Length: 267
Image 1 (tube, rainbow, N blue to C red):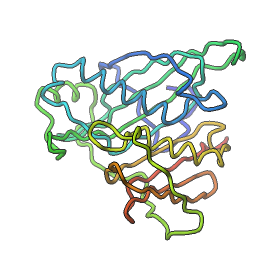
Image 2: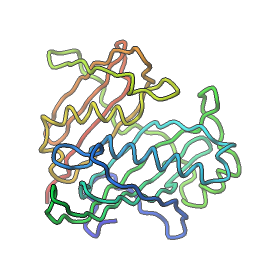
Image 3: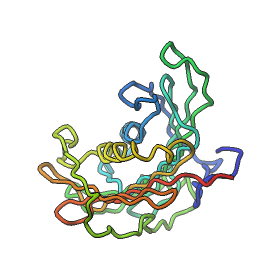
Image 4: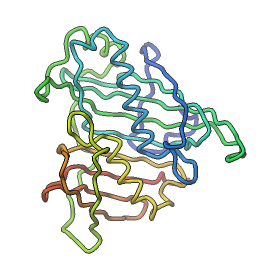
């Protein structure tokens, strides 16, 4: 955790000293970064998906508890990560109940230089938290097996996790600023759902007009409300209020996901 006061409220809680964690590293690739070489939010989301898959494959319950869906992801960019670099991810359970967990992932990076990015940069730091729901093969919430619960519960003292939205604002009425976001076949996973990272690609498109929000520390929150399936038509509705950008992804006149991007308050 950074030595300075945590720049967002509520802050993400550090890992307990007793907590075991899963660790892995990935190279930052050019398809993870924007035109300024900053790791994009969708790039970060792919790292989170990859470590989740790698983590469950490394456990003894990859057969008993194989299906999980993400209800919310929070990404706190404390110090941006850029190319070239190697990112190291540590993943552990920050809180849980019998059917869902808050999985924390800390992403750090030691930056390198090359002819395209010769400037020295401070080490990168991104803190994340995702609300994962255990589901059965029909997609319905299910109890975590005793073995999996025991392993996860040993990482945290919070065993009564409850859901509370962090993006409570309802979508505004349709307006002239609404825009269509074209979904591609490559945006969908083998389960015919829009890939989690693909949502963030639409956010990155919007952030091109709000670069001040990502110039320093910023918090990005997405809450997935309804699945988006192939053939869907998505409309992006958005509103800027001071240091916050709010977005709503509308499908069939219903909100499928809500997003907020908030710049940290300056001292």
